[in-house]
Length: 149
Ligand SMILES: [Zn+2]
Image (cartoon, rainbow, N blue to C red; front, top):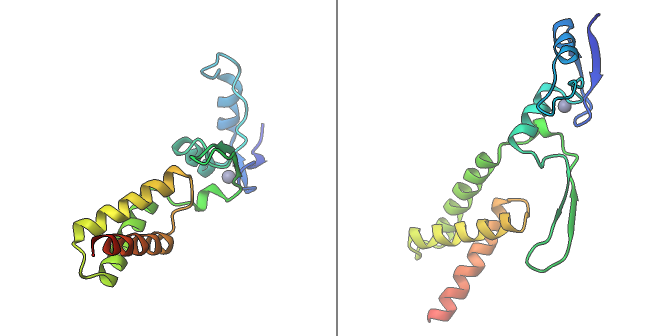
C-alpha cells in the first residue's frame, strides 16, 4: 500500500491517508459490526461533524409559523466558529451597543432583552447577527418605554 489521496466530501480539500491509517480502516469493524469504510472527510471536517452533527447536512425545520424551512449549508465547516463562541460574541457586542444607546435602561433589563431576542433567533434557526439583535433590542425597549409612559 502507499499513501492514498482522498478528496473531502464536505470541504473539497484533498487529504492523505497513510499506510497505517488505511491498514487500520481495512482491518477494523465499526460500532455497527461492519467493516470500516475509508473516511470520506478530512480530519477537520470529521471533528466539526462530531461537535455539530447537523453541519453541512440538509436541515428541515418547522418554526412556529408552521412553514417548512429547508437549509442546505455548504459553508466549509472548518471555517465555522463554534456556536458557543458566536453566542458569547453576539451577547457581548449587542449588550454593549444597546447599553451605550440606552443609558437610561438598567443593565439587567438590557441583558434580559438581548438574551430573549437571541433565544428567539436561535429557536427559529436564524443566523446570529449582533447588528440584528441590537436593532430588535432597541425596538423592544422603545415599545416598553411607550407602554410605560
Ligand atoms: Zn474537509
